[in-house]
Image (cartoon, rainbow, N blue to C red):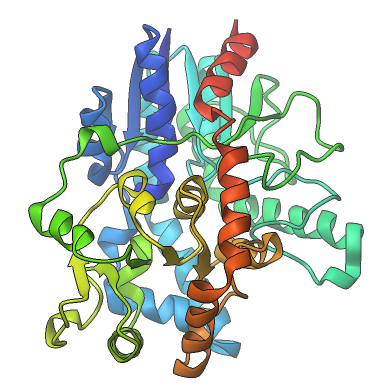
Length: 417
């Protein structure tokens, strides 16, 4: 069979789809990853065909513009939201056109929620469409929306309301543009006001571990929750000598990094982080692209690095500080490491709270509220509290009994044949 996988976003957004694609290819299928150009090398490393999708927002926005969007407070936050929506709308025409080309000839279309063309192209070509969610963001009364959590006092009603708003947020902003595209280009009728499509051959696949958040009993039986689709790169990666030497020279270091949002952390926060690590003599590995890092004289116990696969690195560190992206979160828990989240946007706040609820790390410290006192306090708790390590190891045992990619493939075959 021929699978086209539409996955718009960052490395962390794309990696689980590459993991699934690699498994499908291993089983004899024709697989094409359709993503932004920066995902080409990753796709080709796993011998997958690649089709570029334009409209990469990270290329069109500078670190300064990104910081402005993510650091706004109060009324300015609304203005930043409007700016972000304008940016999304600006790239939509490019993405819709490229996704249409990428889906030609596919037997099955797998897409992430950010690939808005997905369900409409499945309908156009009359093929199975699988929306693969990296968060458990399917409407339920049993846990809050990852994207728009409502006040806890609202209980189940708040959960349902948050999921509804989340779904409408992802649809209403683009509804007119997509409906015009459906009518003028795809020659389909308009989608309903409240729903992006009525096409009956769309199914939901949730690539999130039920060991962390139990599968809600009020989900439709057709929804599959398979566990994380984990991309394992350690065996294909050769570490540089400097990194190997650093790891061998002392106790396991702390890892601190913020994924695709690293460059949105201003030099003032970076300087504070480095000064705390210096003062407390904490061995640490950090991204070399942290803002303002080149102007800081680093001690020998802090090592800046470029790309290192998480499944290789995290087994060799003591604890992890990160932004709360679901990929980094799962990699840390697979490694059984205490975790602390400094969230920036949307679902990262949800997962920051979950880390604390699960007992694997301190309460999250939002980037917009970052200060030295709270950073030092949280860091000390992360490194010293034995219960965080114990709980993280328990989650590691549960996760290692799961194989999201294997389960996903079996479910896909059962669904599309």
